[in-house]
Image 1 (cartoon, helix red, strand yellow):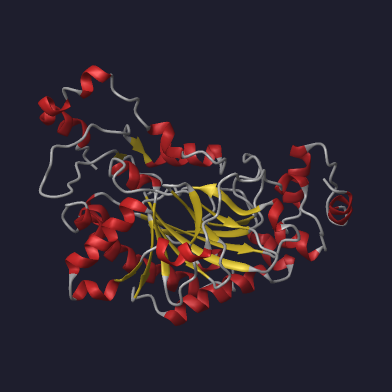
Image 2: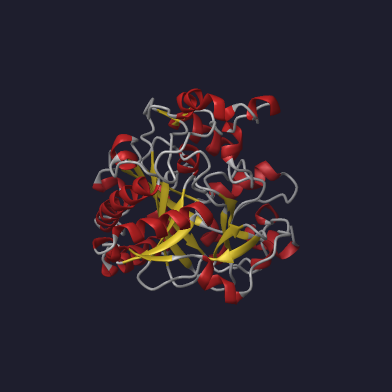
Length: 399
């Protein structure tokens, strides 16, 4: 770690510069997060926040606006099939899209961003009671959920709230966010119901399949991220590359920018630009697993910036943590009902999937690979068409 970074941090924590675990613990013990470093006047990024350079290129600015589709949900009332087709194309290719006319009031979107910023900019004493790594608490404020597991820390602080099926009591929510967080997540749940209906139809399933029958709306978590201005943005990340352990993620971002999705052919990072009034939607790992790789959970990241703060609020539609339901590939159709393909993934429970994801942290590896089945022997591939009924039995998992 550079000398001046060590000297600045020494005003609040004792940092050795050589004992990583001790230094991480010292940072965490301040309960001040990344904002605490910035408030203390740090001028270089501490060594445990430093990331190696990413060799993948960033797309030219001219490509950004066209790469991530913007879908007008109001058109579903006029031409539902058109919207279903647009959503299907986006989910199958880039895994990201933005929605407008989504039913979440613009005033509410502005208000939730404002209260998240207000909470993070309160005096430290007001935030310390909420700083915890105790996963049993429904409301948790900390810096990097995977601080002690990931290869490098990210330049952000997060207020995390478990909002469904059992919401926290008002007293558990920081006063700055109380009332607004509940109202916002309720509105997002309404949007989620519409999105899962459209996605179900895009997969050739009854409209209520994903949201109601498969339990994709059973749980909802909210992660409110605060990204302070960084003195060396090229040395670290706001959020390192990852995919989401959810069914769907609905993201509200401010006008700062910085969110990037990893697209293929060729592999490159593409900005997900802020669009006034829009919400960003991305496919999560569990929908990719359930759709048997038909819908894509795309890796994404947030670049650090010398400007800031950047504020975003992500709502994750997830399973109920205590559910024993088994999630596995389901028979999905692209037209009428073609013969099912062999399962790409084994079935898993919510507990197993999330335990694996949280255990590895944001290490740049997809959690899905842990559940991917080995490729079948060449001899069995040639006979797949002769055993369509057996293939259907392997993939039409009851969920």
